[in-house]
Length: 162
Image 1: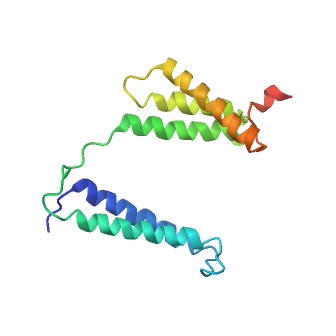
Image 2 (image 1 turned 90 degrees about the vertical axis):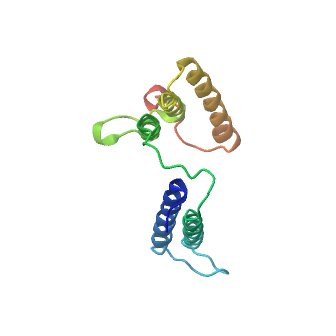
């Protein structure tokens, strides 16, 4: 059999791997039954559904004349690096890194770091646009999480509030 769409084939395989991993990982928790669901019930069902969806996508990828059946191109390293790096920086800025003595900087600084770093994934990145978006997201997050939901977590750097 010939693969009609490499993108669909690889996407389907990825769904199968991720879904199966979640389903297997969910069995480490109590699954329970439909009437008394345990903490592993929902991830198990979602993992199975994702794996089944992946199987369908993989099977459909073998059909000939599939629209968009172009081959998978080169890996976009720049967006991959900046987006992954931005998420890593967000986590480090939000909670700190005690092993090296880096304090938590809070939600606002973490959002600014996330948006500014990830904006450079785009070739024509503009610092002005990133700062505007960071400000809007920071205000929205503060209003949503702290004011409306009344969640208690560090918003500002801890060393500034003492």
